[in-house]
Length: 68
Image (cartoon, rainbow, N blue to C red; front, side, top):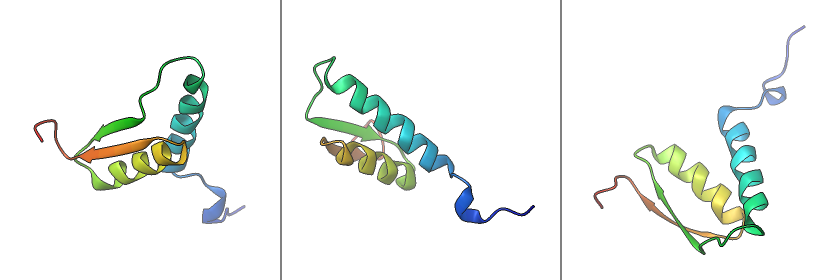
């Protein structure tokens, strides 16, 4: 049986779900900053993390290295 591509979850779909669920679970339990710093040299990872953070009501700053 051959599956359609839409039946598979991508790595980013899975990671998005994990991070999103974690952010929702800690919001009420811990003091969470309004802004998150995302540091990664991979632009695709930065974009995905930004979308997760932003969709959970937080702002995000992006950087490609810790030196900036």
